[in-house]
Length: 194
Image (tube, rainbow, N blue to C red):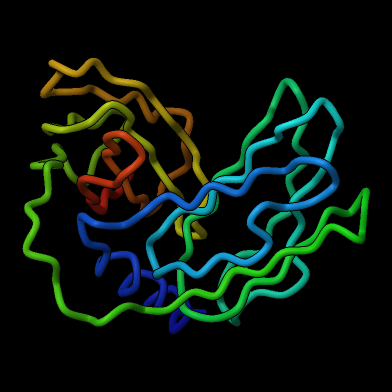
């Protein structure tokens, strides 16, 4: 188990400012696109495009990656999953088994991108209940747990450069915070709740 968390941690720490969000529409009893090629650290976002209820349910994931099973409805029309490690992720709609999809994730080149991170700091770190982020180039801040699930998402004003996050409801542990601008991740920091 320690090895799995070490690999996951190393993968997430290696995220660069160019991580992407891949949109998958769930419409007309199909995932579109049905096949996505992504890098470790990218986000897959399923969005319901019709009023019909569907699920995105993993059928196989790489060893050490978290499985998922989310229902998409008109009141909860989207789900984000951050790719924690390289490999093939297969999924389907458990309500309509003919709906299938595949994500092929690679670890990338291993060469750091020269683009600067616009998430400048997170303090205090470790924190107890609240953490302050300083950032530029963000319209959304997302917090993920160690298995890549979004545990908090908050919109920010374009002129905002400092954001206080109240994470008192989360259990102690390691989290990752992303700043996102126009669908692109502009920065990632590891934060620890003590």
